Image 1 (cartoon, rainbow, N blue to C red):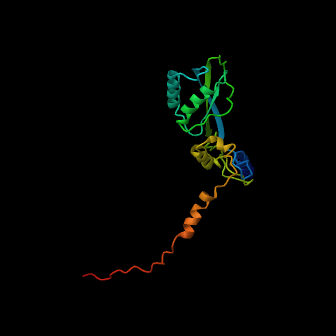
Image 2 (image 1 turned 180 degrees about the vertical axis):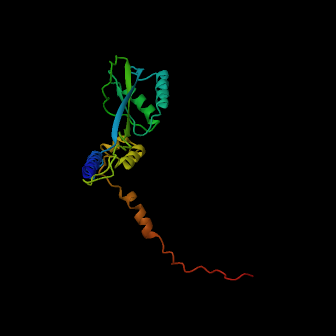
Image 3 (image 1 turned 90 degrees about the vertical axis):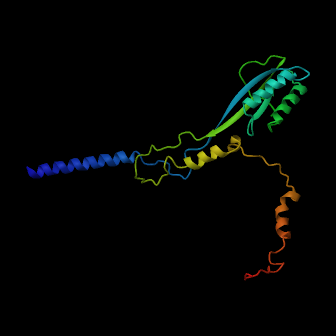
Length: 215
């Protein structure tokens, strides 16, 4: 009877070992590429502010209200400002453009669709702000030390992509980047090269005379 007991213990140990191995395989990385699954996501939010306007543009009190709203929203680089004016008044656009230019922002062409209806005599100012983040980071869901598929970990890319999303000045650049003008200004582009070439060699003036002893 003793050998039977030993065989039963051995079979139980093998079954337990197999179960642990299969359970560990379930937590192994499944991404076999070098691309991180956690990528920055850019989200846009539209903020609206209605002002009273007319053919003559904005009154002084309305300009003050709008300027205070820009200050409260901390209007900054990366934000986009557009207007929805049923009267399409050039004076109104000019007045709003001057207020936005104080924060270094130019008016965008075409306003995004917003809720509600803009009545004649009113102009809706739309501020579009984009934010970037990396959802799901950090990711420590992997529970296995085994990696039979040589896959990348779920947390792979969280650090660099998270830092990129946090530091980029304009989150929209993560989608389209900055468009070039196609023009090159030679006078400024070669300024550093000319300065390097025109610099006199350090040994051209000879060695400096210095005393080695004291009086």
